Length: 389
Image: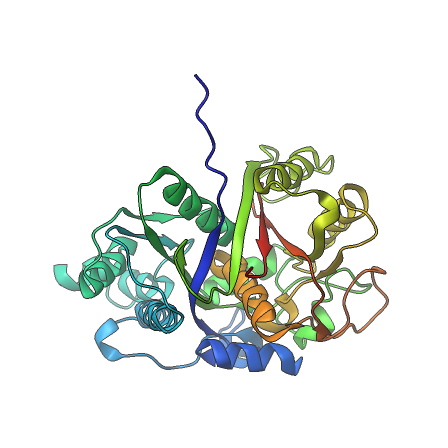
């Protein structure tokens, strides 16, 4: 017998962020609407490790008790999200689950462990390298005992986490879910190799180099972030509702998008079906939009073929950078804050582009947002986001 799908939404009850702009969601919002990129010139990079490059790197901060840069950012985002949710009328249910999206966990610490420390470390300190350790410490701090796990779908991890959390709520596995995506991995080695792949641009100011859906775009600035959401069905003043979503995989190439776009298109259509909405209901597309030719072309094609002439498109990567495993979550946070403030924080256009590309901060109109993500290796995902009822 076919299982019955529970057709209910899921609300973002609380939000916490740490980005290249600094610590906190208000700092993120002010940075986004300023139209100025978070990236700054950072030294110690390049082949000879003596160059300055443009990076949207999380600045120093957090609490020393949380250990590494990654651990401090993760804990700060989670604490801010939980405090925010309680202020919006959320009370934890009996079973609170925890999802942690990671791609390159503790990049700085692994670099130090294998290099400077020669692979030798006290066992207790060695355990901090494991992504499960941060989760365990936060579960203990907040006395949560629901399901807990790490997940990874490359740059689609934020969408994947929302969809997984909604499945947990639909199935009754958890009453509420804390979901955090963290990626603080802009080590010189990682930046060097993404630059060698021809997708990361560190030798020019972000708005000059990263022009999603515009002429002259060369790729994206590397970024870092930790973004946490409290996800629930019981909150007085939510940021937004997650109506549904879908994930698929191209099964085509380790870096390239399948030019036929068969599974990207199917993923978007399935997300609309899962959410129970028509394509005509979508007002905005918050795109993956990394500024690379193949990804921008893929999403522009979906915009022009799956949707009518209504939706407008934007990408915040020129502003926050490409935050890898936390990329989709930063972009979902941008939509949550857009619904809160009534403004889409689109970056300014700098060259000719797609006719439906937003140019700078734009007054929010009624309608739904589709958040699309194309993770490296063929990870496709889309979620449908609605302003709170």
